[in-house]
Image (cartoon, rainbow, N blue to C red; front, side, top):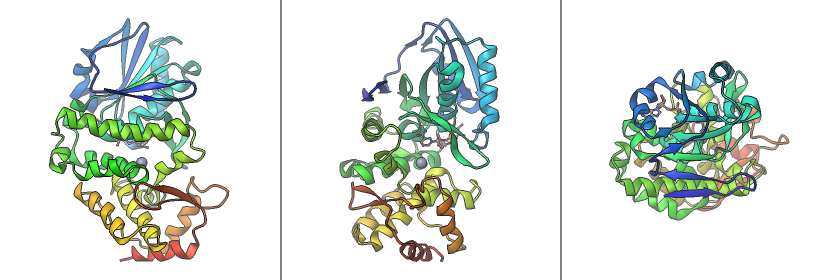
Amino acid sequence: MNILLNLKHHSYKVHINELLRLEFKGKVALLTNAKVAGLHLQSLLSRLVCDELFVITIKDGEEFKNLKTLEDVLDQMFVSKLDRKSTLIAFGGGVVTDIGGFAASIYQRGIDFIAIPTTFLAMVDAAVGGKTGVNNAFGKNLIGSFYQPRGVYCESEFLKSLPSRELAAGMTEFIKMAACLDEKALELIESLDEQGFLSARLSKELWNELISKSVQLKASVVSIDERESQMRMLLNYGHSFAHIIENQTKYKLFLHGEAVAIGIVMANTLALRLGMITDNEFLRIKALLEKFKLPTHYKIANVDEFYQAFALDKKSVNSKMNFVLLDGIGKGVIRNDISKEAVISVLEEFKA
Ligand SMILES: NC(=O)c1ccc[n+]([C@@H]2O[C@H](COP(=O)([O-])OP(=O)(O)OC[C@H]3O[C@@H](n4cnc5c(N)ncnc54)[C@H](O)[C@@H]3O)[C@@H](O)[C@H]2O)c1
Ligand SMILES: [Zn+2]
């Protein structure tokens, strides 16, 4: 099955479990890392047909998602003499698809890009929607481009080797979209067999349903607001809080999706205090996160420090702080009128 991501200039399909054969006219560079290559490269190569193929590997980990790695990748693309008609395939998690998309967008001013995500997070979020980039000393994803792939191929068989923590972390991004956009999708996740999911042992039909639902939600947002002028900001639900938690714990304690799970609970605490959601709705989302063994609490050591960090977050536009909050289940809204006192009182609740 596939989902069309409808955009003004470059619509493309996200294919789910239908990668049988991929054929290219020119040269192809396949970007991956040693872990993913060791597990799944053979399976992918048996389905690729092209004139010449070059495999480029990068080091595994968020800490290598930087300009140095990007430059190495570009160098290898030049050594391989890729031309304007060549294609770059990114085969891996969100780190690989983010760097791959960026490299493809700037190599000789842009060559074709295909994403073959191998983590649940990358399938449901990172590889769909055209945001690419790397981190630098000033923060995460601060350098990059909007560059849409020609196509995205999600194969659930690749998920079988993914640790349960990584699967759960990806589920947070799905829960984020469902909570903000679509109560039916939330019900689908609520009814999901969590043991089957966390051990990547769902049926192909269920994977199709899960991945396609999530991709549909992301596609619906991106097709309206490709460059994040308004609606796409909803996808940052829970993220302002999460970025501060990730920063304070030096990106070591939590996976991104785990920090977002806590961020969602913090945002929901604020929405609850503002009367935007009920106690039941608050508990419903928290229970769903806990179902997937995601963390929902973080002890804030210094409330003032935590609050100040918001001001530095890149999502604060015109010095007004944007908060993505639920105004009921399935109804994410962007608010920039939240008082400092309201935020501080929520942060105080996380002191213990
Ligand atoms: N562009 C976007 O819109 C967007 C959205 C969300 C996240 N992101 C980015 O995505 C990144 C996070 O992505 P991620 O969670 O996929 O992390 P990741 O790419 O670091 O992958 C997580 C780990 O799983 C390994 N792995 C990948 N596939 C595997 C498989 N099939 N089996 C076993 N191990 C496998 C990886 O090598 C890595 O060690 C972040 O850099 C984030 O900024 C981008
Ligand atoms: Zn995220």
